[in-house]
Length: 168
Image 1 (cartoon, rainbow, N blue to C red):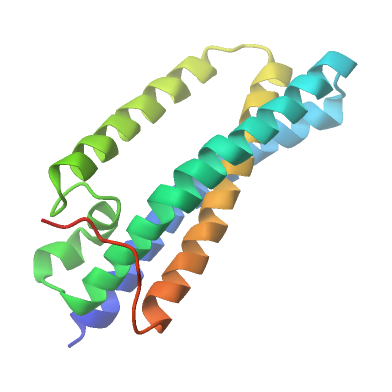
Image 2 (cartoon, rainbow, N blue to C red; image 1 turned 180 degrees about the vertical axis):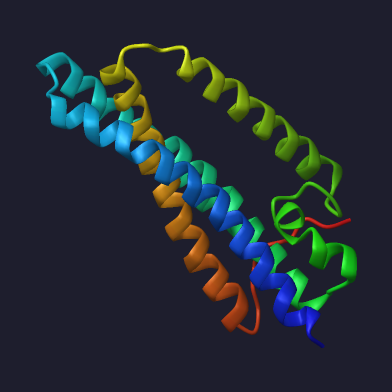
C-alpha cells in the first residue's frame, strides 16, 4: 500500500522541515552575535543559556518526550495509514489530532507558547542579546533533530518500539 510509504516520509519530512527552517533562520543571528564579539559577561550568559537550553529543550523536551512520541507516531502512520492521516501527516506526527487529550493539549499549548516567545524575542532590538538567545534555541533544536532522527530510525527498524504514539 503506497500510503504505508508516503505517510511516514511526509510526516517526518514535515516535522524536520519545521525544525530545520527554525534552525536555518536563527543560526545566522547567533553566529553574527559571536562574530561581532561578546563581553566576558555575555560569554557567561551564552554558556549558561546554552547549557540550560541543551538540557531543558534538547534533552528533556525533545529526547525524552517529543522525539520518542513523534517517532512512534511515524511508525503508527506506517502501520495504520489512512488518507486523512497521510494528507496531514506532519500535524498527526506532532500530536494535533488522533491523539489522546493530554497530547493534544500539550501540542497546542507548546505551539502557542513558542509563538508567543518568538514574538517576544523579536522585540529585542539588541542583535547581540538576540543572538545569544538564538544560540541556545539553535542548540536545543539541533539536539531535537538529531534525537528525532535516531528515534525514527529505531522505530522503523526495530521489531518492537517501547514508546507510545499516544493515540486514543
